[in-house]
Image 1 (cartoon, helix red, strand yellow):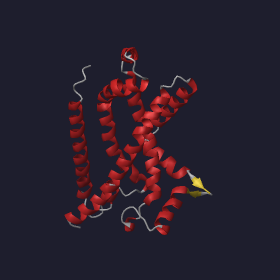
Image 2: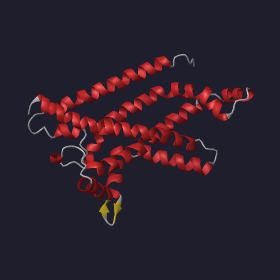
Image 3: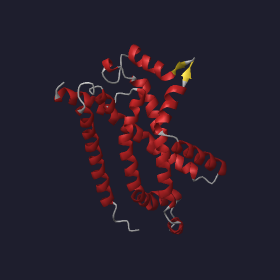
Image 4: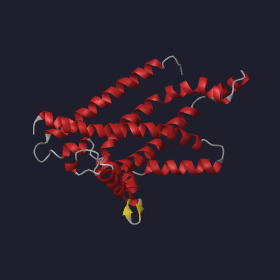
Amino acid sequence: MDFWSVTQSLLQGFGVTCLIFIITLIFSLPLGLVISFGSMSKFKPLSAITKVFVWVIRGIPLMLQVFIVYYMIKINGKNLWGEVNRFFYFELGWAVGPPELNGEGYGGLIAVLIAFIINYACYFSEIFRGGIESVSKGQYEAGKVLGMTKNQIFNKVVLLQVIKRILAPMGNEIITLVKDTALSNSIGILEIIMVSKTFTSKAIWPLFYSGAFYLIFVGILTLLFGYLEKKLKFFKE
């Protein structure tokens, strides 16, 4: 077990980690915006249902949500994701990670993504809601006086201010998502922590080595959000 072979295996696991991270962001951000509009709706039943849903999702641990999605959805008494995984592996010949590690493949990965997307969409929705509601009503009224439509007011007056105000909390959530991807190994997904654990019978250092991948990834995101905050400094509170 040399350093290079361990690095190659960890890079494969880190690829799955990045896949979970990217797909979760792509779908949870727009879904979070939709949920935030639901919670701010003037139609009280919709607003109440949305707020209760967000409260439930935010109140239940993400790992438990992964278990619920993975173990409770069945078709004809069989685990749905196991059937999906068999389809990808036997019918299409696709697999996630080295087959000798016996990972859960695409079925488990899809289950994890559903749980992650719903969970983070609810967290993002509260950040969006707080940012939108923080913009004073006077700015909306000033836009109306100038003859602007609601869409023009939102896109040209409100949106950039909202982005500036939510950037820091959004950055924190996104960095948390990087680390939360490790929870996917609870159902056997071959992300980087899961892969590093396969080496622990021979040596412990690969487990610590996997932490370097997270540190570098989080460091890059921290620099990126710091840059974006500087670019939006022209908005004065």
